[in-house]
Amino acid sequence: MKDNKKIAEDSIVDFIDDEEYYETRRNKQQIENATWAMYIFAAISSISYIFYLLMNTESFDWVNFILNIALIAIYFCLGAYSSQKPYTAFIALFCVFGFVFLLDIMASQFSLRGIILKIILVVYISMRLEAAKKVQDYEKKNAVK
Image (cartoon, rainbow, N blue to C red; front, side, top):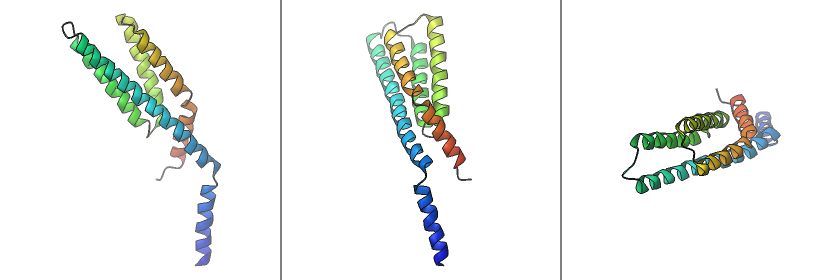
């Protein structure tokens, strides 16, 4: 009986001493910061669209507003998804930003403030992309089946 208890205690100690585990915990903190940045970006975007609605009530384009609200919902959903699959969520966010940028070019609706915020967010998340890949690979490798 004592041999089984000793084996169990040793396996717990081996798990705690695992450097990969601690690196993953540090990387998860970086991913959480990037997720919060995504949420903050979505909140700032939604507030700016609400102000836009209040300031331009007579010449308001409802189709544009509904599309922007859908984009904000996508940003929030990708933020929530980044806790499950961070690397995939960040790559999807880059694809959404690229698609929106191309649509802005075609529609000639450049907003310097919006582009600067997106560039800041892309750079911030790009700096955490490697950590997201490591965490996603670690969780895939150590997933309970």
